[in-house]
Amino acid sequence: MTTDAPETRFSISNNPSYLYQAYFSYILEYKNGTQADGFFDLELLKKSLNILVRKHYEPVAGWFQARNNSIDVVYYSDKFNDPPVTTQTLDMDYETLSRHVHDCNVELLVPAAPSAAITFEDPDPDIPMIMVKVTYLESNEAVVLGVTYHHSLMDGTAFWMFMANWSALCKHLHEHGEIAEFDIPHPPTFEFPDISHFYNPSKTFEHPEYILVNPNQFSKRLQPGPEKIVETILEISVEQQQALRQQARDIGVSFTEILCAVLWKGVNSLRLELNPEIGSKSSLYTCTVNSRTRAGVSNNLCASPVTIASREQTVAEIAALEVCDIAQLVHRAIGKCTGEYLSSSYRYLHQQFKQEQDDRCNGRVGKKVMCVFANSASVKCVIATSRTFPIYSTDFGFGTPEYVRPPYWPYDGSMRIWPTPLYDARFSNAPLHIYVCQPEHIDLSLSPLLAQFIKRNID
Image 1 (spheres, rainbow, N blue to C red):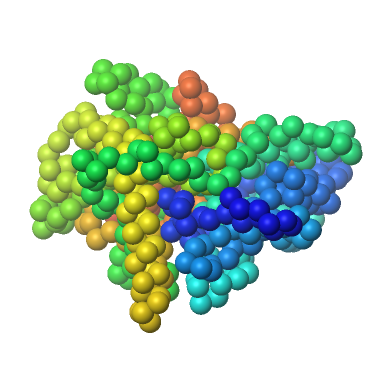
Image 2 (cartoon, rainbow, N blue to C red):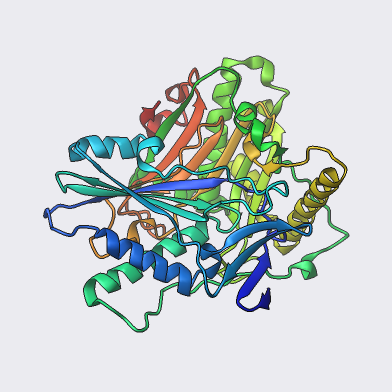
């Protein structure tokens, strides 16, 4: 980080997931069960948000700059890019609003975002790093927060720490009024650390998980032809989780790994049964891994040290294996996400950044974004797990959320493991949800492995 008062800047070009130039959005639903006045006071929300970013998250109150062959975040001590907050008040009942939340109606409930791509052609893009939309009801029955963040600055871990800090600060202001000092629960750190000491030239890794695509062709590459993508919600009951945990213990893998194996096996076998010709084609498993602990990086790092574990087999091979055998493949894939693997990921992505610079300098179109969904594998099991995040602890002083909707990624193979309101990852004391996206003709209820978990479809 370099400082030339009042300006401070640091590079995000050395961040392993800076190529995730995309916005992610979450929708949080809060019920006003007592019909209390002042429920989610707008000025209080905005005040606490601005205090948080100006005092603790200065880069969030800054700007992206693409200059001198580097993408930087620049912020100042005398001016602030405060997160934009928009509002609306709807004339509808609580049940209707809740249905919009569950169906992930982003057009209604999430702030409209500009392009997230940071280009040297537009070196000072107007790209907010956090955006908020607050939806009130005329009946005062509920409030919905739609929050959008730019992934180049935060990953999921950093985002939910941000939300925990914002809600804690807002709750303190709500209960105590003005404060001179307040210790937020998760003080963030910035500037991605040097991980060069992990580099081991004797070890090489393939990176099929990183597919670079032109953002202007983003959607076209991800859709499986003209087919509509349907999201199915799987629900893993407490009893089913206990059985899976025991199965995992018996073979020496984690609960997440056995769950990933069930999903990969179930989808893969169903796709092969519907189209036997793909047996020799590729079946790709990936899972996002928080590499902070493995790489000795602070858990409070507000950056994206995301590693993507991957394993590629043929469709026929996965169909022939038992779930326990697939869980061992998943276990080895996740186990390789060491500091050495993180360093390899960084070096690979840095090479892509250098290639983009060279393309730009030589007049070639070089802008790329990273997206595993664009992989050409016939079967994709692209998993993101959020079950350990403090999602349902975001109390702004008005109670915890009734429901939090994860991002809807309508791409073939997208799967998100997501907690329910009472879920505790340590004990599996409540149901666990998995949001699975597949082409419309893929009926997951036909899978003997997955049918037992099906809750409902979202078109």
